[in-house]
Length: 356
Image (cartoon, rainbow, N blue to C red):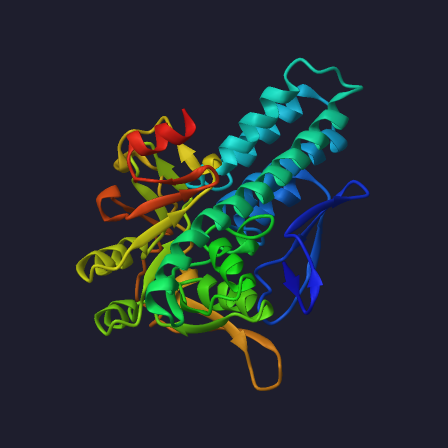
């Protein structure tokens, strides 16, 4: 997708260096950062310079490529794989990508391993682009149906950033929106700011602006009253881990949006590539929920009147805070799952029909 009219992807490999868009600098600064070692990759994932389940997975895949360049030794590769998996616990794509890479590299001799690793990492990225594009084409049908009935702008609420900045291109939740826009269907997006890191305000609104799509940033607790007023036609979000049962683990606050949508009879969709499905964990309580630094809540960064980025403390110094990064939305509150293979019920039966 585009930034200032120029086409970009979120990550690419060039001259033995992994190039990323540093998302901690957006929307105020556009910075391309070089990752030269597997440690650089791990730090980028932990610091959320890259974020979004599909992009985290792709970044980890390239991290293993850098590991081989750095030290073509099996024990170092194994250690790198474990460290990458442990860098962020909730997004299943991370483990999926590392496991896929390690399986591909198993038994490969040292002379061929770099070539095979790079090809596999590139394949993961290429697949993600295709998956997200197809998610968009499938989700487009839903937006078209609403528009054909309404004959007016389709108002869509989304939470966090499941846009192209969270994937390689297109995004998951935003892909149907981009396809609708390209087809000439008028859409307007309510973008939850998504505290504490404000990915909705800083990233979703930013990328929608760059594509010329109308959007309005709202405080996280505004969605309910907009639904009561009839100003939301549908909700669509992404997911960091989807259980076979259809339960969805996504950015904290997603569950509350689903409850509000259910109470107001507004369809609530989740867009995901198959790499985000966890077929092993059976119960939502067993999903590892990442707890991040409390300073993400107590401090906020912005630009002052002189154009300088500054971080300020907004809480009383004596106050404690709890910063859980994700919550789980039960399948019963999800209208449908939008995947690269089609749309299905949020259930094991629905997912199995598409993927098994």
